[in-house]
Image (cartoon, rainbow, N blue to C red; front, side):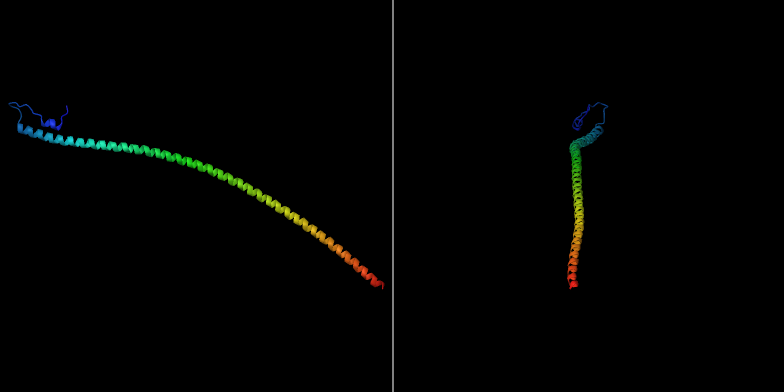
Amino acid sequence: MTLTPVEIRHVRLPRRVLGYARPAVDDLLEEVVRSFEAAWRDRADLRDEVEKLEGEVARYKEVDVLLRNSLVSAEKAADELRAHAGKEADVILEEARVRAREITAEAEAERERIRGEVRRLRALEADVRAGYRAFLLTALDRLEGDTEERIRPDQAA
């Protein structure tokens, strides 16, 4: 059976002829009541403190759950972002490779065009030289022919 401080204060012990020394027992009971009241108040204060702390623990647990969920969401978003960036990098890399192949093909075609132009110019140069030579030879032949005709009539005279 538990007694409250108020109940202890109102306890009246029966008296007997050779019973207890009333002032000493009353003093002792009064001290027990004061001590028990202090313990009872401390217990009530501690109970209030426990309720307050349990409320804080519950709030911290909620915050912990929210933080864990946020962390999981952030990790998931980071993974998705990383995967998206990887895919985008692959696309950019493939586009760069395609463009590099196009540039290489264009450069190769330009090189072949320039080689063809060089061959054409060399052939043209050879043709020009041959034509120039033929022209010079024809011109020289004519000149020589004209010179011989002019010299012969003078020699005949």
